[in-house]
Every structure is written in C-alpha cells, then in structure tokens.
Image 1 (tube, rainbow, N blue to C red):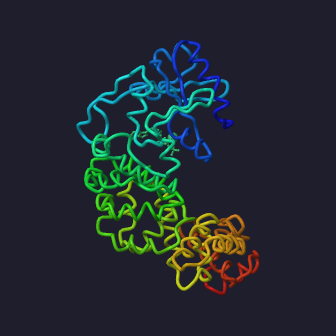
Image 2 (image 1 turned 30 degrees about the horizontal axis):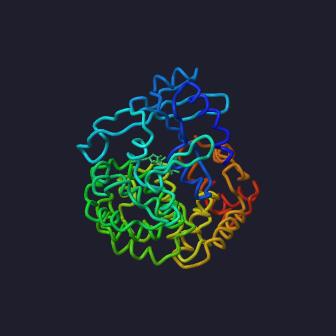
Image 3 (image 1 turned 90 degrees about the horizontal axis):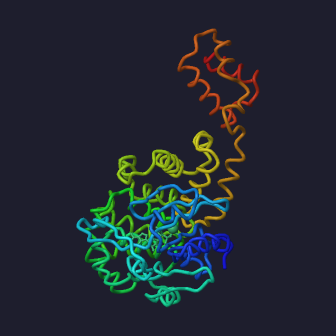
Length: 397
Ligand code: ATP
Ligand code: MG
C-alpha cells in the first residue's frame, strides 16, 4: 500500500473500533490502482458527522451539512465524509438534500464515474460494485448508471468527464459521450467557478488534445465562457504540440490564437484570479514581441524568470519548436540580463532626486525605467558615474 494510505490506516482503525465502517474512497483509490501519485486520501464512513466528532477529540466542521468533518490528528488532518445519497436535483447542480446512509454501496453509487466509485479497506481490499477496475484497465470513462440521468443531476460531471480524459488519457464510453453531446447546453446552469476548476485540471493534463477535441465534437465548448464562436481557433490549436503546456501557458496560447481584443474581459469571464490574468497578459505580450525575444529585454526583465520561460514554451508550441529546448533558452535569456531587479541598478531614486535637486514625483519612476532599459540594451554600463554622464547627455539630469 502507498505510504499515504499506510499512514492513514490508524484513522480507519479508530473509526472501526468505535463500531463503524471506514474506507478509503474516490480519486486516491483510482490513482493507487493506476500506480499514479496520490495527492490526498478521502475517507468515507458509516458514522454520522456527530459520531465522528465523538471519535476524534479535535475536529473542524468544514462541510458538516454535506457530511464532511475534518479530523485533526497528530499524524495529519483527514476529511471524513459520512456515506450519503443525494436527494432529487431540480436545478442540474446541487442535490436538493443529502441523506446520510449506513451503506457503502449506496455511497459509491452516487459517485460520478465507475473509476471514481471504488473503495479500499484498511487491508487493501478493493470494493468495486460498478466494475471500476475493469474500466480502469480498459481505459474508459463511464458514468455510474444512466449517463443522461447523471448529467441531469449535476451537469458539472460533463466537464469532469473531459478532465479525466485529459488527466488519464482514457476514452469516453460511447453512451456517456453521446449523452454529453445531447446534454451539453445544461452546463450553462453551472457556476463558472466550478467549471473553471475542472477546465484548469483539463488544461494541466497531458492528454488535453484529446479532451479539447471532445469538447469540440460534443459541442460543449459552445456553452463555455467566450468560446462559443471560437471553434476554428480551437481546432487550429489541436494541430500544435500541447502536451507539455500547463494551464497558464494554454490560456496564453488560446489568447494569442484567438487574438481576442478583449483579452482581459475574456479571462475575467472565466473568473480567473486577477494574478493569473496579469500573468497571462505578460506572457501574451512577450509572445507577441516581433520578430524575436532579443529586442524585448525590458519586457523580460519585467516579466521575471518564470513568465519568460512560460512565454518561450508558448512560442515554441506555436512555431513547432521543441518545448524543452525553449524552456532552456527562456532560462538562459533571463539569466543573460545584466540586471534582474531594480535593486541591481547602480543608481537609486534618491540619487536622481539629489542630482536633479527636484522634489520626488512620478518622474523618478519614469527616469529609472529609462535607465533600466538603457542598461538592459547595453547603451550604458550599470555604473553610477557612467549612468550620471549618460543622463546629462540625454538631457535627463
Ligand atoms: P483529484 O485527484 O483531481 O482530486 P478526484 O477523483 O479525487 O480527483 P475530486 O473532485 O476530489 O476528484 O472528488 C473526489 C471524489 O468525489 C471523486 O472521485 C468522486 O467519487 C466524487 N465526486 C466528486 N465530484 C463529483 C460529482 N460532481 N458527482 C459525483 N461524484 C463526485
Ligand atoms: Mg480529490
């Protein structure tokens, strides 16, 4: 068993000693069988949240209405969720109610795909009532039960199906795909924030090309923010090497490719964090520098190492160049800058104020920026006296 499971076995034992059932469930069991790295283990139990709170002295009610309690123990914190079924769904999103149940099978049945509907006991036995193991070995994403009903209960599952295609490189079962095609419009009932979580996982996955291609084939793209009229652009993206791009890089690539004048509005429509939006804007700005990065030292300086490397990767993908070489040259390009930060500059704002004998103001920043550019471009050496002379020569002093 994986280290992470072994470490958590005492938690299962503690719950069992109190007279309840407890299992590892969901993504960790799937990843364990696949031999993929496990991020965190989820525990499901027949004990109600109140019963769990009696078993563990220290807990936090992180999602108690949905049955989840966080147990805080010496060996770490664990999300423990009571077996539950979900009531009727009237809005394609959340169940109207959840009911706690004592049966593991019922809990597994409410889960989205067969590969996510397995449990493992403390001895490592797999409980697999819906043939998840078979579907793992046949590399198939298939809903537990009727896909039409399952997508109607929670339309986000359509997005999740495609993100698992991207992460695992599996195929969608035919009926599941067909149902996705038919039900694509109801994805618009789902909050963008929830769609974004799945879309970014899709973007980070190594088989994103297959997933994007299914996004197009199923028509789901039409109901995602700002993508409804981007079919041709997305199709072109499929001709590019995407495998090694991460989410921010793929966002940038899409922005370059779609040449959206309203890039910020497009990214905001996806409810991306402002920091990510700014990063994507910087990457796009760098990628669009023509004809090469050579003339863009100031932009590289402003972007910093990581965004520069990302921009090089995006550029490589667009031109068909090797992505790993691009990473290397991005790093090299940044390293070769004569200065990396403002504090590397041989003069400070105070120097400028003293030389000019003028009150500090916005001019200080403007002049400093000119100096940075001149130093980066090799017009002047990063030396206090030389910079002072250069400023006189340029009438800036
Ligand atoms: P990851 O490794 O990305 O976390 P995961 O399979 O653990 O993948 P989560 O989103 O963390 O995915 O969900 C945990 C488990 O909860 C899933 O494996 C699945 O059994 C169940 N689940 C999550 N979301 C849904 C949903 N919308 N409908 C039904 N079951 C779901
Ligand atoms: Mg998870």
